[in-house]
Length: 306
Ligand SMILES: [Zn+2]
Ligand SMILES: [Zn+2]
Image 1 (cartoon, rainbow, N blue to C red):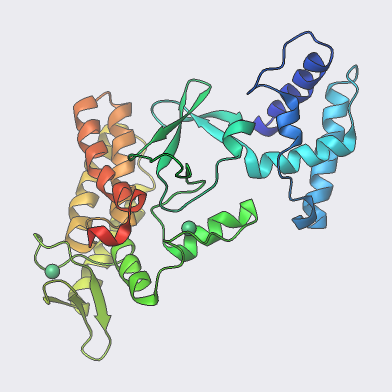
Image 2: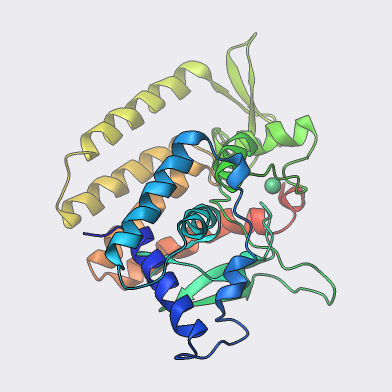
């Protein structure tokens, strides 16, 4: 079976051919020459990757023997796909395939974007997530934004650039604060959404908003329980059973992690998918609402929230 990338390249070659011969019309958004203008980053590729793309180009030539194929152009197009193609998901966020949208590809990235790319079937739609003033740049995120700066820069390596958005260049204290929210623990007072810093001398984690502390021993004990529970989830296949186990994990994680932490977000997103699978739409909606505040935090000015 052909991979989504190979299938996409075959469609691209055929489309170019049909547009060149005038069988199908060229439009403002559907025009092969928009693909020709995309960044390929060929010079950033290592030899191994370049060889792989050349082999894939040969494969395309073998699959389409009656179509005139320029091997160098196809090799370059594979490189373009790796940094410009989008994964298309259905409305339940299940991956459907890969698509190339050259007009969308010119939209720049930000780790605190003002817009988001969604799919309605195979149509790519850019939606504003906040009021955008005339003259403001439309920005989307190419990666998962619920991640620390270090992780985001790692994800962005595949696009061959280092992000320098406001979230990426904040001062060390703000950076520590964001990490304490995304990967840290919650305050002893569950009504407080302060973030905790570790105090090595006293072996405790102290809330930077209300001043209450949590003992390192207590944190480690719950963390151990969480990892034992996570390990037991690996063998679960039945969605009803999985929903119960993940709810238990969520309750335990709520005692440990910050309410906007990545770990809790991931558990809730898994629960959301399981509940959709079980057709429990009301339950799924509840979890959907619970995940939104985390993303809202990063889609606007992070500092405004803490
Ligand atoms: Zn950034
Ligand atoms: Zn607190």
